[in-house]
Length: 187
Image (tube, rainbow, N blue to C red; front, top):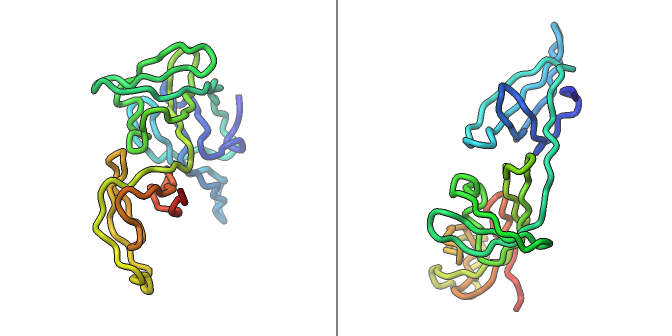
């Protein structure tokens, strides 16, 4: 058993007969009364986000997860197939299980899948990925004085804002957590 002092973002805990991932938390010590921890939890199975308050020092049950490296292979429309990098075993996940990373899932993406026993509970992708721009308005040279941006569609179908000088077929580095442009990849 652990306590609220062990809280950190990304920690998975068992609460109210479900598995929850801590998205955000804040220790609060009011001038009067006992301290408490205000947290934002995401249900691993349903994706529901709730706010929950715990008393400071309250006992919680942390779930120990095992993470293994997988390579994303393909999707047949209803299932997403991954291959274990060590054993070459394949696993199929449903759309709801990969929903969080779907915007950046392309073939041969290195992923990490977290398991609670034999049950896959989370798919993690790299924090930064290089993706090709498949559609964007033409840019104009020297039109960067104001630091303007324009929408660009990436090869995965996600649309992000990029600087005006980015053109179709260029490769850009993207922050997958915030869905933001980082830099153009020289190639």
